Image 1 (cartoon, rainbow, N blue to C red):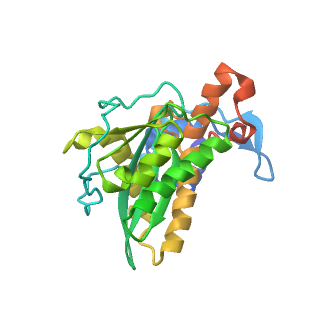
Image 2 (image 1 turned 90 degrees about the vertical axis):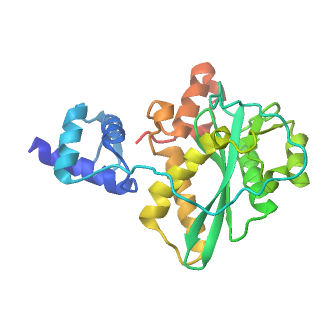
Length: 280
């Protein structure tokens, strides 16, 4: 009976989270879950703790496995700019002492029935939170700039000061365009570009791209239209930021990790908008 009840929780959690949780994530999530009332709403009570080996045993019995990211060949999305480049401010150090201290940006591609769609992400290195994104059917400067504007809007909406933030990207023309660099300068954001021909200098951003493709694109795609694709990306990004446990964040979701950071330093500065972020 105990196994049956646990199996039901494991199966429901697996299905509700893109069918990507492996044993570690499932174990962490199950031990944070709250008991639901008769209306399906969380109560203040939590389920009894469950051992990691038990989760592994039951997932194996159910035939459930986590998603594994892999390397795949892709069309070229980085067209090197010919002008001078700012210095590399990260030097392969992808840590950050606080939110909005270091961002990384990159562009990836997604095949659809109508052709390739390109997606630009901006990620905060402190929490690995996606702070901005944009999808279009063409690889142009506005793609990267729109993702940047989205990130700026989101953080300023939360009252963040972006002065002194380091923005790191590859040497693509989208990130070296005049309008892009001027926008960074307007806000006092420091531009950073990795070494020529060194993919490791953009490893954190490329890791996000691999997770994105593994958890959403290869499991749910392809999509017929850009509009449908954008809606699915919107849902995935929200889930990634507010629900998906991240190993970088001690298996909290990125938004919850940031909230805990601010709450620990000054509870009054933790925004009400972030306070409701779920840990399951």
